Length: 466
Image 1 (cartoon, rainbow, N blue to C red):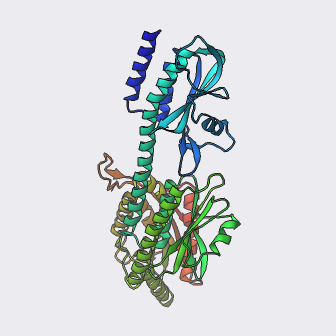
Image 2 (image 1 turned 135 degrees about the vertical axis):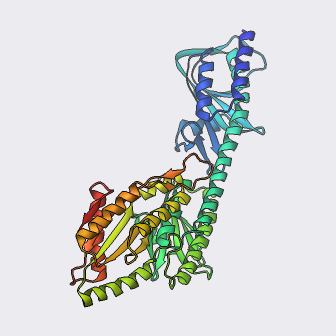
């Protein structure tokens, strides 16, 4: 029997030197343990000092709910070697002939002489084990404890890396973007990916009131109540047993620009979450402050910095001029609204640098396809608007189809470092409307926008006329 035990421990030692995650480790250990007993399952639970909760290492490090028998076993095992079924035991000094009927076995995971989790085995019914098996399990638990410490450290390191990546990415946004309606959703998505256990909401102040900017809806009235309590002196607010946190976005002049809200129905925000959110909020505020500064500088410019097309302000000036000309000369005028299909998927799949490359590429195709007298602009985000002077609707349809086909047939450089992906293909949807001499420029583009909506709803990559 001693030879078999040594063989088992040798296999465990070999396994623990391999690069495996907690799920793979569990599967392999269960297979080895079944050589000695009818082990039904094995799982690892680690105590999280930050949240004062126990986490399930196998199931995505989820928090184990209060009231679970895992908490009772974790408390019971302190100072003992095992919890067998529901009773705590210490091993005797010598191996005896005693056998025990067993349903479950919990063993401590030890770090620096202190328990920081438990290993739990479940057995088939009518299983009995002897003292030799329990001695073997004590050695087994010591070996596995070291491996689990490394897995936990790797998990924490991964979180730290993801945090610093998020900080870096938020800082980099401002290099190419200055429009808040484009920047804020990107920041919201980054925060949402990092703080995975909570829903994230981003509010900005407009005319003294908090307005939800990302995502599209928030129905929790408690959040609006918290927002009403925020002042320039507020560091952050926690409520609902720390399950909702409000983190103000502050300007350089110490005015409240907005607020980031983290909300959960299950888990309280941990000290680590709060620390990360404070730092991410500060970085987001810096980015938004710079965007506001750039916006003030660029509001008198005429060119969009990313695409080199007219910016929206310049476009609105040209729209007024062209409508005045059309009315005076009684000439045709058409409006074109363009949207890049599934643009969010491009950002999510390839990153925002590739998204910017796609915007530049589509803008270049638009500019090269249109006449010199046509007036294209970047309308906002992934939307473009075009004025087609001296153009009837059927002529505009021909231009639109030619542009749509050219975008579809033109691979765009992906701008991805260290990747085999060189190009990205996208399509566009388009809505057209012809000026009717009875409407304003705003109404003309509202009709073109309705046609764009129809194009997107009916399958995308097409041109529709209002």
